[in-house]
Amino acid sequence: MAVMDGSVTISQGAYITIIASCYRFANPGIFKNDWAEVQGALYGRNEGGLVHVQDAIPLAHLSHIAVQMQDADYVALSAIEERMASKGMFQVGWYHSHPDIKLMLSLEDVRTQAGLQKPNPLAIALVFNHVLLMDRNDDPGLKAFRLDDPSTIEIKYHEVPFEVAGADGRFFAEARALLANVQRSFSGASAVNGILGRVEKAIKDITTEAAGLKEHLATLSRQGDPAAVAEARAKHLQRIEAEFEKKERSLRVQLDLLDHLELVERQSFSGRIEDVKGKWAEFERSFRGNMK
Ligand SMILES: [Zn+2]
Image (cartoon, rainbow, N blue to C red; front, side, top):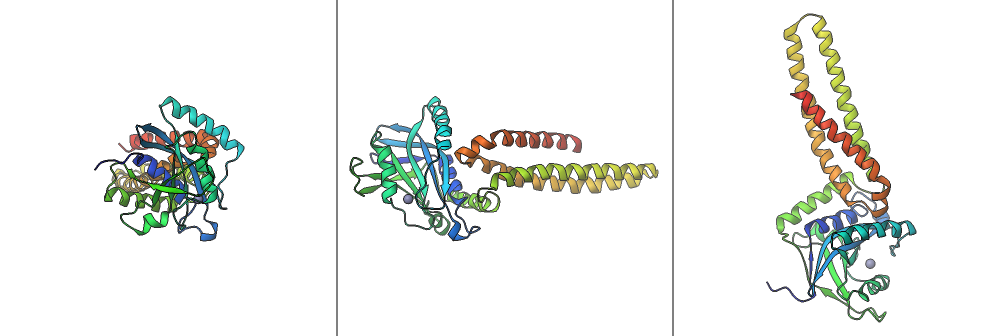
């Protein structure tokens, strides 16, 4: 298929971050009145007339229509810009969500887009409505727009063709499955503390249980019945191991969701996330070592 001039390719990773960050604040687990719009920045490259969106950075969510940036966001954003520039990427556009709202640009959106499109005529605005993705198998829930003329404030814009690179029906099915995990474990502003707390609790619970088993086996051993010790050991170890594996799967999925944090969260939680991830990796290693 010939790619039209000015069209847009979105990497699968950027698409996943866009939909996860938006769904986090508007999903069936949240009262519709409390749904918040999410806004983020898109990074990548222009190549000829084409735009490659390679990365998406969620910026902020707000429950009223205009999504606005705070001062702290701009400070954090300049650090991101530097990191992106070192990888040869710059801001190629922005995205925001219209939860269960038509995919279009409001007057406010047109102003934001004009600010980006004046210096970069290929800049794009992506708008996402999760309801379209969740309801229809073949709909990514996104539209891409450009203003007809960024130098006027008239609301005149057009749709731009785009594709999510290499995405097929299976990719979108997996994307919907990921959003189910977002609703379960990553919903709302308290989600980060929730995930980190669950990892810490899992480490504590399994450690406590393993210590209890050790004590129980020591008692049996003192009673001088080696067969009973071996039997109890085999039985309980199997149970603890099964529990560990179940938690490991679930926590792995939850920790991966932390890749889609908003800008200021990335800064304020980065130390604690590294710390908890390190503790979990260490715990996994030592648990597997002990099970051998
Ligand atoms: Zn809008």
